[in-house]
Length: 161
Image 1: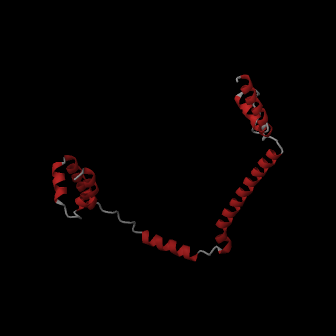
Image 2: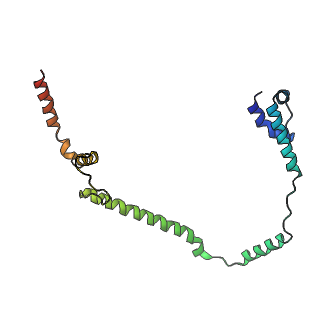
Image 3: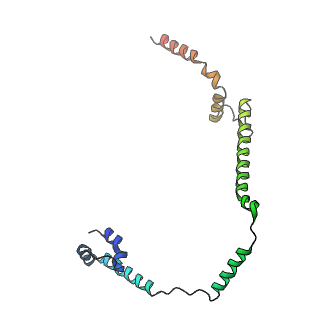
């Protein structure tokens, strides 16, 4: 039997909850590590059996009864108190939705007009970022240049027959 399987059974073995199988006893006798761990678990359980839970304060019951009476006599909050939390959650949700829609509308309107947002500044021409921005900005224009690509291929074929 493997040590991993014995470790899974150790709490039950230490407490005496399950009958010890002959293979388990044989493994525990032959494996010093498992025997030491089982002995440690048994000592821990013996210490826990000796532990006594502390007694509650003698005035605990009296204070609990007073607190319960106070809560029972407190006037009910009414429908406004009951609705406060859901109304607050709904208001925050609506505020978030309005904020997101305003930001999206502003982005769509600026992109439709060809206005770049204030946080994106154009890069210098000739740099990699500047070239990418130029390609992106003039994508529609460059998409119609397929004819030029065909002409270049034909020129190459004519030059190198």
